[in-house]
Image (cartoon, rainbow, N blue to C red; front, side, top):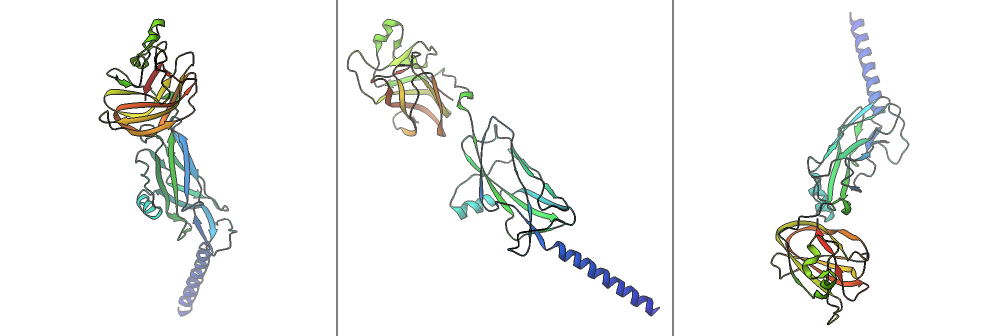
Length: 318
């Protein structure tokens, strides 16, 4: 009886030693995210949704600097998730002010498998559906972290990667605003003599929807030099992402450099952007550096294609 008990104890100890050895062998490796702790910049077009970004998780020996891991003995499962709480921590450490990528605009695949015999996981996928969820040209931060693993130990570092998303839009695809209710407040000058040829020349012509008419600065009397300016009352505060402007259809005397200003009272103006090298012919569209909400808009034309007088056939916003 005692002999049988002794055999059982020995067998149990031997099994424990064997299991411990296997566990120790597996714990020689750990996992990390390449580029962890760094800012991975992602630029994409909002219209081209969904946007898909991927990254992988790699195996490394726990004892640095040995960087030649062997393949795993068995499959390991790594659990990852978005970690928006780390945005405030990142901003405080880096002196930045990035907003978090809005919840509902993205999904993150929750698991990644590292197959036996390999040292790198299948791709982790981040899918962003930005249209209607994010503002164009705003940078949003999304941290993604390893939260746990099965079949391998997680490291003490390199567990979070930071993605900085910036969605752009194609101005040519933007819907222009309805200009009903708009009025032209003032212009630096007009040229009513253009009316002799049916071109109008008056300031209101640049929002009449007729490409054949245009606002023209004076050329018959004083021949003013740039800068020329014109201001608009939109009737109410509107959200403005950008503008469209076009010279007369012949492409003569169009704006070359435009300063775009906004105001809430029509008298105190704030510079919302300067736009250079505007082509002489055709419609020119551009986003503002940052979208604004305003009731009054002023264009100051500081350089002209041709000139010195300027013509604007159509002006609109989006």
